[in-house]
Image 1 (tube, protein in one colour):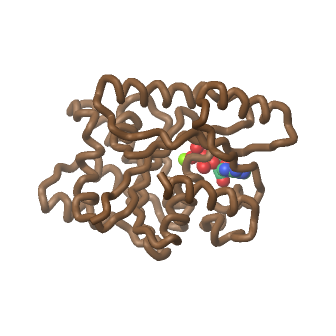
Image 2 (cartoon, rainbow, N blue to C red):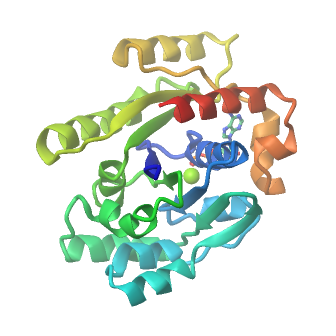
Length: 258
Ligand SMILES: Nc1ncnc2c1ncn2[C@@H]1O[C@H](COP(=O)(O)OP(=O)(O)O)[C@@H](O)[C@H]1O
Ligand SMILES: [Mg+2]
């Protein structure tokens, strides 16, 4: 029985391509025949809208309910069929903010998100669970990183944006050293890349310096990618022959190989 891998996509910054990466990674793996569950832990609920679905309070219940069989049954009602083979979604919405408050008030351990996801990993039906996260401090993001077998940090090359990357990387190091995190960083994924611009090249150089050997092949800035959420399509459906599809496909294979 294959082990379910949890993949967490995180950055302290918004607008760096986290949700775009989650959706396309999820669909890419699903198209390879893997069973994939995307869980939207960002209160903005954009995983749902990007897939043409409605934001709902699934993440809230996942994060706040216990692990009794009847609670699991309740939470499983929120596992939505995305209308794409092998790809499911637990949608989130603004109630995820309240879950963050509950988690902090009840002082749930750093292992909590991994524990609440165990109901989906224990039977081996799923190959991957992909967590989209919000740029928040502590709370959900920290627990989502601790839950990860594999972590990816997308980073826009539009500015020297290594700050947000470094914060997540520092969190990972402290989770590893102090809290027994067992996962691995697949790498930093440069996004919105424009190779003809010096700032963008400088940004890649800086990432390479900060994360030697851990900088993945960049995803170029492309209008077609920015049009995907509005059309509720992944790049593999919207524009399968595009460079963007090739780039995300290469990223999917990178994660698959890990
Ligand atoms: N490589 C890209 N080229 C152009 N637009 C992009 C690219 N990646 C993401 N976008 C767009 O940029 C915006 C922010 O991306 P998103 O994935 O929502 O970031 P985050 O989840 O980190 O906030 C969205 O409108 C998205 O469609
Ligand atoms: Mg997002």
